Length: 346
Ligand SMILES: NC(=O)c1ccc[n+]([C@@H]2O[C@H](COP(=O)([O-])OP(=O)(O)OC[C@H]3O[C@@H](n4cnc5c(N)ncnc54)[C@H](O)[C@@H]3O)[C@@H](O)[C@H]2O)c1
Image 1: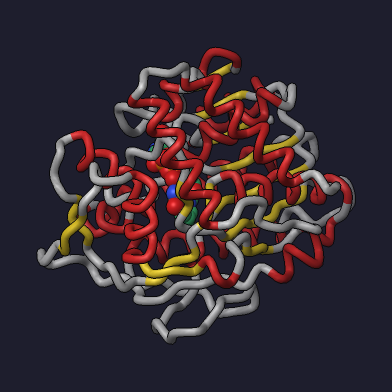
Image 2: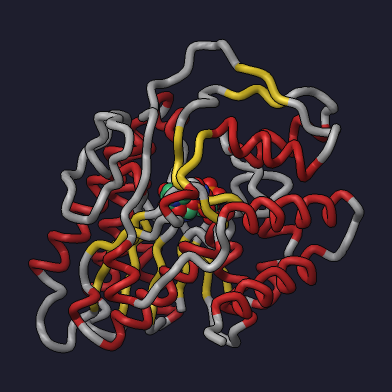
């Protein structure tokens, strides 16, 4: 398997899980985007082959793919921040759009050796006027009012065009896109990420500053969409009906306002966590975002394994263990095992 973005938050959890499953994993990404990082703390690079390649370098992407000869490619590498995309739109489009083109092109040139490619985009790829009580389904219009969101809509279009033009014949690689959002989990120190901001504030013994406490997001533990990506890759290897776009969101009741998450975190973490409103001017972000994942439930038999309450408990457990100096590869593997057990039908 080839995982692009394996040093990032989602890619590192995914790579560790694949290692636990006994898969031969190659990673494609420069070093971790944050320090500390889940990648370093869980020793993800220890047991996999790695290529420190920039996805904007088409030749290097092709070379890495030829070297790894994967059956399955999971493309997660991206510039994933809305605010950074407003400061650097060109880089965001280069990485998220041309990077995806380069991965698709490398897969196309491998001529069917790659059986399945999952392109990870985002719940933000939809045109979103912010109507409450609206859950996006795969047939909804693509859009995006900021460079990050629109770059993910572009990546969807690019994947669709490659599928229709080059990757639909018998024996060719199959490509699908996966739309999920707002994942939480232990070890996310990314800028503008809720858990990262909370952990940094606790470390600095100050209140965490919150931009949009009323914004509703489809929160879920990182393991939920990762299990969807793996299920999707498996199904892509089996049938070309899986070669399309899929939503992987939480249960409907887990689309919650930021303030609700904070109150639950305060209850779990105790006095060490306090929060206050950040009044500074902030980029416009949709007030409400929720996903309809019934297609993945029907078509892939996928369900979110952990609900939001369990997700928050696992996040606090992971960070408490980290603060206590525990062995974080072991702690992370234990959480992966608990998730896998929760998913197994009894
Ligand atoms: N975390 C979320 O809540 C969330 C929500 C929706 C979608 N996503 C998507 O999931 C994917 C993973 O996100 P994440 O949260 O792990 O982000 P992250 O910032 O933690 O990781 C991004 C990864 O991409 C790599 N990368 C960045 N620029 C690169 C380049 N030019 N060439 C090669 N690699 C590069 C980084 O090194 C890192 O490994 C992204 O595609 C993101 O858009 C994330």
